[in-house]
Length: 151
Image (cartoon, rainbow, N blue to C red; front, side):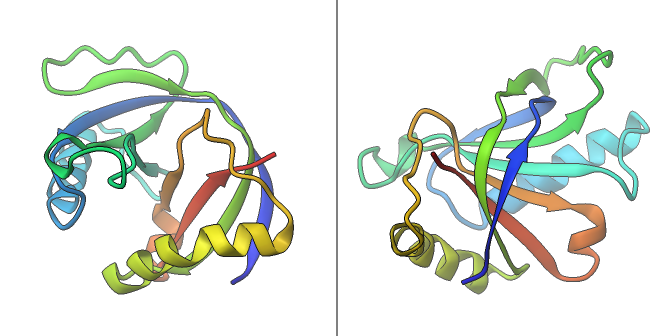
């Protein structure tokens, strides 16, 4: 696997949280967030969508796993909505894995990234979340990224 090390800036986000098993249902929430963003004129070619699994299904019951679908917004944007929440991503040092934007490639990457981190000598920083990053321009070329916090 190809790893890029990147310092990710802190982000302000608008997000929708889904609770339940990780999987295809997360795509529905992503579509809902994009629809909301289009209504607010926040979605364009430069948009960044993030998927953030908040729980490890090895330790959390699948029915209790939380997944946040996020849109990076400007610091001065005020999220006033009953359905969409406002939050922040801390940022920091991440190992970035560029992968094909298919369900199969994403599932395989989740299996392969941790052994690859060890092989490359990086340690997973459990204090920060793993981020699936979907930049519109990259998705249009059938790619996405999994960003793993490291030290």
